[in-house]
Figure 1: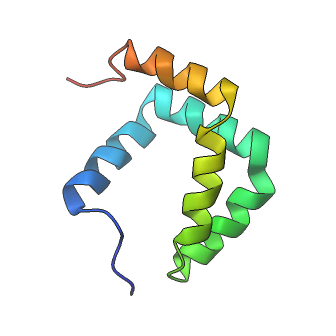
Figure 2: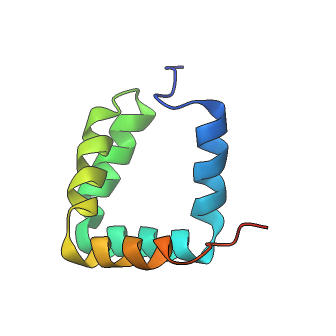
Figure 3: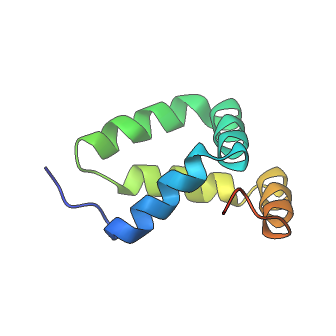
Length: 81
Protein backbone atom coordinates (compact mmCIF):
# COMPACT_ATOMS: atom_id res chain seq x y z
CA UNK A 1 0.00 0.00 0.00
CA UNK A 2 1.42 3.42 -0.92
CA UNK A 3 2.42 5.83 1.81
CA UNK A 4 0.03 8.75 2.33
CA UNK A 5 1.39 12.19 1.45
CA UNK A 6 0.43 13.51 4.91
CA UNK A 7 1.42 12.59 8.44
CA UNK A 8 -0.75 10.43 10.72
CA UNK A 9 -1.41 13.51 12.88
CA UNK A 10 -2.56 15.51 9.83
CA UNK A 11 -4.72 12.59 8.72
CA UNK A 12 -6.36 12.41 12.16
CA UNK A 13 -7.13 16.14 12.04
CA UNK A 14 -8.47 15.81 8.50
CA UNK A 15 -10.72 12.92 9.51
CA UNK A 16 -12.00 14.87 12.51
CA UNK A 17 -12.82 17.81 10.26
CA UNK A 18 -14.45 15.51 7.68
CA UNK A 19 -16.81 14.20 10.37
CA UNK A 20 -17.80 17.70 11.49
CA UNK A 21 -20.85 19.55 10.15
CA UNK A 22 -18.58 21.97 8.31
CA UNK A 23 -16.59 19.13 6.76
CA UNK A 24 -19.74 17.41 5.56
CA UNK A 25 -20.95 20.71 4.05
CA UNK A 26 -17.67 21.22 2.25
CA UNK A 27 -17.63 17.64 0.94
CA UNK A 28 -21.25 17.99 -0.24
CA UNK A 29 -20.26 21.14 -2.16
CA UNK A 30 -17.33 19.28 -3.72
CA UNK A 31 -19.56 16.39 -4.79
CA UNK A 32 -22.22 18.75 -6.15
CA UNK A 33 -19.81 20.92 -8.12
CA UNK A 34 -17.45 18.26 -9.42
CA UNK A 35 -18.76 14.83 -8.50
CA UNK A 36 -17.53 12.89 -11.53
CA UNK A 37 -13.99 14.26 -11.31
CA UNK A 38 -13.96 13.62 -7.56
CA UNK A 39 -15.03 10.01 -8.06
CA UNK A 40 -12.31 9.43 -10.67
CA UNK A 41 -9.68 11.16 -8.55
CA UNK A 42 -10.62 9.13 -5.46
CA UNK A 43 -10.31 5.89 -7.43
CA UNK A 44 -6.87 6.97 -8.64
CA UNK A 45 -5.86 7.87 -5.09
CA UNK A 46 -6.93 4.41 -3.93
CA UNK A 47 -4.51 3.05 -6.52
CA UNK A 48 -1.72 5.26 -5.13
CA UNK A 49 -1.95 8.24 -7.50
CA UNK A 50 -2.71 11.21 -5.28
CA UNK A 51 -1.95 13.92 -7.87
CA UNK A 52 -5.35 13.77 -9.57
CA UNK A 53 -7.13 14.06 -6.22
CA UNK A 54 -4.84 16.91 -5.22
CA UNK A 55 -5.61 18.81 -8.45
CA UNK A 56 -9.36 18.20 -8.12
CA UNK A 57 -9.40 19.50 -4.56
CA UNK A 58 -7.16 22.47 -5.44
CA UNK A 59 -9.50 23.46 -8.29
CA UNK A 60 -12.46 23.16 -5.93
CA UNK A 61 -10.74 25.26 -3.25
CA UNK A 62 -10.12 28.02 -5.80
CA UNK A 63 -13.83 28.63 -6.50
CA UNK A 64 -15.47 31.74 -5.00
CA UNK A 65 -18.18 29.63 -3.32
CA UNK A 66 -15.62 27.44 -1.61
CA UNK A 67 -13.44 30.39 -0.61
CA UNK A 68 -16.48 31.98 1.06
CA UNK A 69 -17.25 28.74 2.93
CA UNK A 70 -13.64 28.42 4.09
CA UNK A 71 -13.61 32.03 5.25
CA UNK A 72 -16.79 31.37 7.21
CA UNK A 73 -15.18 28.28 8.74
CA UNK A 74 -12.13 30.31 9.67
CA UNK A 75 -14.33 32.55 11.77
CA UNK A 76 -15.87 29.58 13.58
CA UNK A 77 -14.74 26.53 15.46
CA UNK A 78 -15.83 23.50 13.41
CA UNK A 79 -16.48 21.34 16.41
CA UNK A 80 -13.23 21.29 18.33
CA UNK A 81 -13.67 20.48 22.00
